[in-house]
Image (tube, rainbow, N blue to C red; front, side):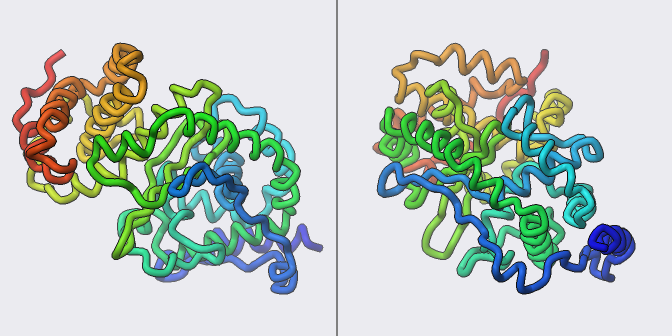
Length: 370
C-alpha cells in the first residue's frame, strides 16, 4: 500500500506545481512520525574558542540525494568514495521518495554546488531562514525562493524518516569523529587564526568548518548578520595537512573577498574583457561568469600569500603551477598587487581599505594572450 502511495506522490510531484513554480508534495510520514523521529544533531568538535568543526546530517542527506540522481543530472561531488558508494547501495531502495523528483527540478534551476550548502546553512532544521540573517537573494533564488527552500528541507526531513537515514548516520559516527579529529589536528598544527588576522587585518568572529567527507569540492559559505559575519567553510578533510589547510584558507578567504568585490560593480564590468580568453576553461570549473572567476583569482592569490606565511614559502612554486595549470592566468599579477598591500600596511589597515585600488589595478591589466 505504501508503495502505491509513493507512486501517486511521484505523479503528483511531476504535475503539481503551483502558479508560483513552487513544487509541493504530500508527506509520506505522518505528523506523529515526524514529531517522534530522533533526528540527529550535528556531530562537532571545538578546535579553539573561535573555530568549530562539524558534520551535519542534513547536509550529508542532501548530498546523498544529489548523488542518487547523478545519472539524470550529471552532477556529482564525489570521484571515488567508499563512504558514499556504501550509502548509494543502501539508499537506492528508497528512490521512490518524492525528494528525488523535487531535487531534479530544483537542480534544473540552479540548485547545485554552493547553492546546496549555502542554503542549508541559511536555515534551521525546519527550513525557516535563520533569525536575523541578511538574506542573500541570489543564493535563495537558486533554491527556487524561500518557500521552495523550506519545502525542500521539509521533504528532506520526510525522506530521513521514511528511510531511517539518521540511524545510518549514527552508525557512521565513529567515522565522522575520525574525520573531525583529523581536521582539528591539522588546524591546530598552524597559527591559522593569527595569520588570517595578520593578512586581512580583521578576524572572522565565528568559524564553523563543515566537513563533507570524501567530497572533491568545497565552498566558502558565510552568513551575514547586522552585527557579524559567520564563516561556514564547507569542504572535505585530507590526510595531507598542507592540502587541507590550503583548501581551508581558500574557503575562509571568500567571506573577506566576495563582499568587497560586490561593492565595485563598475570596476568588475571594466575588467570583464579579461574573461574572454579564459572563459571556456573557467566554465569547465563552474565559474561561468567573470565576477566568479575574478573572485577566484583574488582568493587564490590571497591563499598563496597566507600559505607562504604559514609554511615559509615551502610550497610556493607548487601552488603557482597548480593555479596556472587550471588557467588562472592573471594570478601572478594579482599576487603582485597584494604584495604591495602587504608591504604597505601602515597605509592600509586591512584588505577592505586596499580593495578599490586592487580592483582598479586588475581592470588595467593587459588581456591574456596565449
